[in-house]
Length: 612
Ligand SMILES: Nc1ncnc2c1ncn2[C@@H]1O[C@H](COP(=O)(O)OP(=O)(O)OP(=O)(O)O)[C@@H](O)[C@H]1O
Image (tube, rainbow, N blue to C red):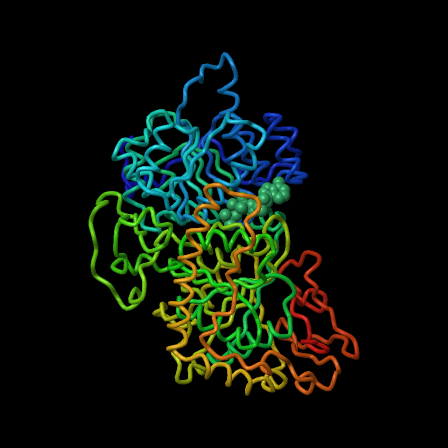
């Protein structure tokens, strides 16, 4: 099976092709193992999602699968359930699978995702005793522990491609007995720099391995992987209409604004709780994470940060706790969207692999595992980054009301994955993107420090891409007159958050999290039920917080009258009730279609009568 990436035979045909969502069915119709069915029942999955309906039957027949389905549509179960079922069947007495053999390899681009898949397997197999054993070798554990885990020949190995390639090269991971190979987030795997690793893995695969390529988009990268791993796949590719029928609508808005005004809007939105529920705020780099966090802290608004320099255990814990509703706001960086342009920021191998922190981590170079790259660019000046960090891709943040792009991403593909953190599992959500048009650049650099292009171009590309998917981005018009009344407070807070304060906060948090990471390491190993919440959103206290800043004076709220903050969405004025009661329009209930966004679907509430 020595094929090469780039040797794509673009004319190759699938043996079986489906662009139709199969009719709604029930999990019963799959005849899955009863223990898996009980797990599904416990999770309250009433019916399979369209991708599950389409993919599970051919997968149970042993066909290769290539599935494109939107973010949050349940692709994980679509590949895991048939694999787990087939492993259980193979283990039934008389079916000849007695000895310990690794038959399943699941490749994911990031450590966060590896952890997530591992946990999902754990849930599905809860009632299977020790019949199915899975290990996650993308975790921060030493090479020797990884080796011993692998030599125990678990049924399923979850890994990033680099880890898998390293262990294949050292013969700790045997690929020849494999029966199932999954490439999850297939559209992202190559952009994480795993091309060589994928070649190495392809070279070691036996004939007849059943391959699953799961992806949110069908890009050239996916085509390449298809050519390399599964030429004759059953293809699930819903058309636009079918995809919209899959539920999970994201109402998408953008706001044209200057750099300072971004902070003003953020303050107003979160202080007045105009977004009800949990939010993820995406920013372009680590400093900005802390800048925003300190800024919000000035107003008594708590938030956690997530970025690639935090210890991996802390990151996993933050996601876990966020999903348990311990935190409402996460400020996350999306550094790895530009990994291709930044290869020389990568700077080490896995010397520290046992430390449980994020300082050790470029293990992307399976072909040169011991090579140290010393060169650093500006962006790696503070810390080494984890190139397998990525919370905007595939991570199942649950019940997120809003994805707020404080900084626009650089690519429309990143945008799609970011907004896919909301509206998951058939729910609705909202994406709000702040962008700086050329005339509002002022003295600040536009948008992300990573972007070589301006926001306008990126926004146009995003609109085009979303348009192709039948989605529309609408302008969101705040009543800036009212918002401006908050500016002097915003200015004061922003002045307090100096560059030095940001650096101090970054160092302080990192130190704290490294300490916490040790505790968490044990937690993840032993997973005790009683671990009390270890908070990641404590005040950093590197900047003095004035008590009065935490309150919102009545006069800013229009003398107790509910005031209309939002002039309209969809570019038009949207009238809505004002008066002495809290206006509750746009409660995010019901399923918007991304079109005709009006009174009922306006996701931001008005402000007024907000008691702080
Ligand atoms: N049949 C179902 N019914 C209800 N919820 C489901 C069902 N299948 C999966 N889910 C839930 O939907 C959420 C999203 O699933 P999953 O993470 O597999 O999506 P995904 O398609 O892989 O998303 P992404 O492309 O972002 O990785 C999860 O919380 C999962 O528990």
